[in-house]
Length: 246
Ligand code: UGY
Ligand code: MN
Image 1 (cartoon, rainbow, N blue to C red):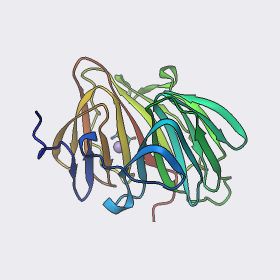
Image 2 (cartoon, rainbow, N blue to C red; image 1 turned 30 degrees about the vertical axis):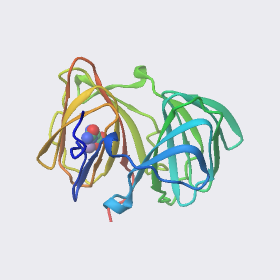
Image 3 (tube, rainbow, N blue to C red; image 1 turned 45 degrees about the vertical axis):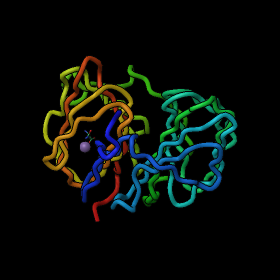
Image 4 (cartoon, rainbow, N blue to C red; image 1 turned 90 degrees about the vertical axis):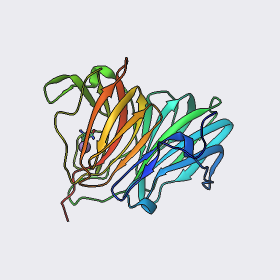
């Protein structure tokens, strides 16, 4: 039996690893017949929120975004989704971006449908329209090589336009692939591993991570990663972008 007093999760001033073994459920008004794990939130010093929702049969997510826009990504299963008068079945690897001030509804999920969300307070930019509702999907063919390294591919899920103040990307590392340098940057990250295993370096601490694990990196948290094991390692990550540094 595993020792219950141990976990791979860590929560530090400028980064966190949240492994599923420590999840405790939250009740979110309007989100019913589901479990909600709030993985990243301002309570830990972050300026984004990241949740993982597991829907049971008959589960529903109904609401209206307020100041925060929400990006919903189906990690497993499927659900019917209605946003902005458009109803679609969203399946694994598909997403919908819901801008601030917009009604949304998810229903008719298959059992154990898992939906990952990233939330950010929207910062308008003069001269640029706020983005509208956007549906899309993961597509390896749309993932160009990153920094001339064939072992690394990044798909940008949201358009690279100034109206957007957040990016959500899928980063695939082939076996042996690694970040080309230790990154030191103002942008913040929230991420979840969708596949494989890796070693992540955060602020000079080294962590083994795998599918299902999430990471928070505060601005200027130094970061580096390498894929480990027999299969590609893949994570989906959030980044704040396109606004004047204050
Ligand atoms: O976009 C990024 O900053 C990305 N290369 N960082 C990361 O994956 N830790
Ligand atoms: Mn980075």
